[in-house]
Length: 299
Image (cartoon, rainbow, N blue to C red; front, side, top):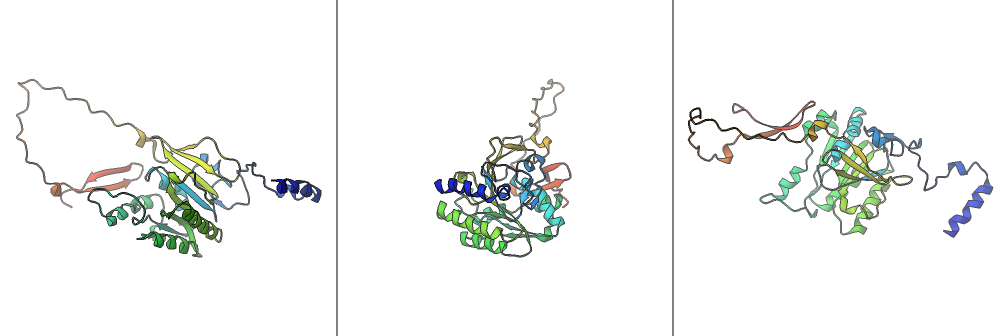
C-alpha cells in the first residue's frame, strides 16, 4: 500500500498526459471504447456491462443455481450474431464422469450425458446456423479440460460455451480457469464458462462473473465481478415470453347431473400398457414456446 501511494506524486510530476489514461479501481465506465463487444440482446444488461455487451477475448463466468433457468436463452442473441458473421461455435458439454451429479433411478451415465444436449430446433428457431456449431461430449474430466483449451487455440473460433468440470478442489479449478483466461485473450472469441452457484465465493480470474437466478417471473442477473465498482442490485431480464409465466388455469369441479339425465356408467377400461402410450415429442413453434403434443397414430 505504501509503495502504491508513493507512486501518485511521481505520476503527477510526470505530467497531466499520463493521468487520464490511468484506470482507478473505483471508476465505472460502461461505454469503454477500448473493448470489442457484442451486444447481449438485453438493453438492461448492456447498460451495466463494460463496453455495453459481451467482451471479446475475455473470460465470462456464469454461475447457476441449477441448470435450465434460462442461461442458454441469455446467450441466444450472441450466438445468433456469431452465426450471421459466419463464426464457429463450440459447445463442450458437461461430462458425467467425475461431475458428482447424482443419477436418477434407472438412468445410466450415457443417458444423463445425452440429456445435456441442447435442443436443435430451438437453436435453429433463434437464428443459429447448426452447421457452424460443434458439440463435444467428453467422457472424463481430463477430456473436458483438453477440449476447452484446444477450442481456444483454434483461429476461427467465434464462441465457446463450456461447462467446467469439477476439479480436485478450488485450487485446481482456479488453475483451469487461469489457463482458459490466458487462452481467451489470444483471439476475439466470446468465451462463456458455466459453473454451479456454490463457486460464487471462490476466486476466479474471469473478467466478468454473473450469478443467474430465476424468481418464477424473470431471470435475475447479479453482477459479482466487472471492471469497476460492483453492482448492488440484480438486473431482471425477461428471457422467455411473458405468457410463459402465467399461472395455470384452475380446473373447476364439474356439477353432478341429475340422476335422470346422468350418462350411463362407463365400464372401467383395463390398465394401459406404458409401452402402448402415444409417443410424446417436444416442438417449438414461432411465438408459442415449448409444448408437448402426442404423435398421431398414423405416424
